[in-house]
Amino acid sequence: MKTGSEPTRWSRGPSNGALAEALFELSEREPPGERRLALLKAGYAVLDSPGRGRRGVLDSSPPWLRPLLHQLATCPGPGALEAAVMRLGGGGTPRRRGSRERFLSRVEVDEALAEGPEDVLPSRLRGAFHWHTQASDGTVSLEAMARACLRRGASWAVVADHSRGLEVASGLDREGVALQRQRVLAWNHAHGADLRLFQGLEVEVLEDGTLDVPQPERLEVDCVLAAVHRQLDPDRDQTERLLRAVATPGVKVLAHPRGRLFHHRPGLRARWERVFATCAERGVAVEVNGFPRRQDLDWDLARLAADSGCAFLLASDAHAPRHLAFDAFACAIAVRAALPPSEVLNLRQAEDFASWLAGGVE
Ligand SMILES: [Zn+2]
Ligand SMILES: [Zn+2]
Image (cartoon, rainbow, N blue to C red):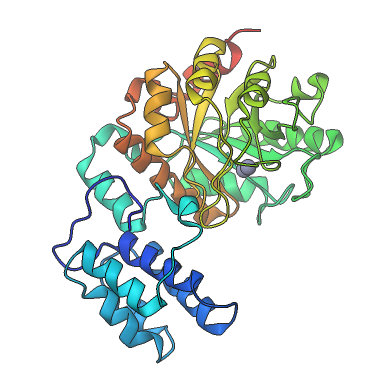
């Protein structure tokens, strides 16, 4: 009954994370249909709710769900909540809890930011790292995203559209990369003093650890992010796949390392201390992806990466301007993991980030 590793505060009933988990567990006990969907929707609504007030969730739920929600929300402790789920769901054990562990609810993000050091607040980030445009699966143009970064107070930013090899998204081919390059240069010519743009590319790590973009093309962009989106079988150790990817010359960032997705897949399995040690050795930064359904790395793995000597990039993985605010989730994970601010590259000036990009092991 937990989404976080910290003890649940129960002063006013279950936390949003615990209440959402109860709703997800109940949804899994329903056959596919409207009831199941309503429980799922309520679970997501609670998870994303900015406060502990559940009025909005109650009002948007169908009448049959309201008394059930009320019952869960007034449980006096974790044991009572668990018993209520058993009673309401007719017994049995939940199946997919593993894919929902170590995710922060919106409320937990705000609590972490309020309690954490001021260094790692979203407003302190100079660099807006890893976002998408219409050139792949984002919703707006490069310039519109850059303006949105500027409005949020960034002084540099890294666009990271998908490469062409990614089947789930319409990625950039070599010509697309070159066209985007022109737009990045034009932006920097006109607005570079306010917001310096770097061209990244989110390339796919194939099953054997090679990348789906050949090296001559990778050399054309400022920042290569290696990422896994497919072949994420959690039963197979994938250390070698990741080691090969991060040891590839020119790779600067290991993006959302596990490839997990909330409620859908737990992400891949690897001997992370080996992966992170190689990242540290090769000067490859490890991403903390703040997209709420990813939250990848979680705080425990981020802590392990910090102990291995890695540098970090906090990412929103925004696909639309409003998603840029997802960097708050990455900051909250950084706070929980107690990442040293000196190793958070987003906190650096544009010139420092540029020299970090230019350096490294080849
Ligand atoms: Zn991705
Ligand atoms: Zn992405």
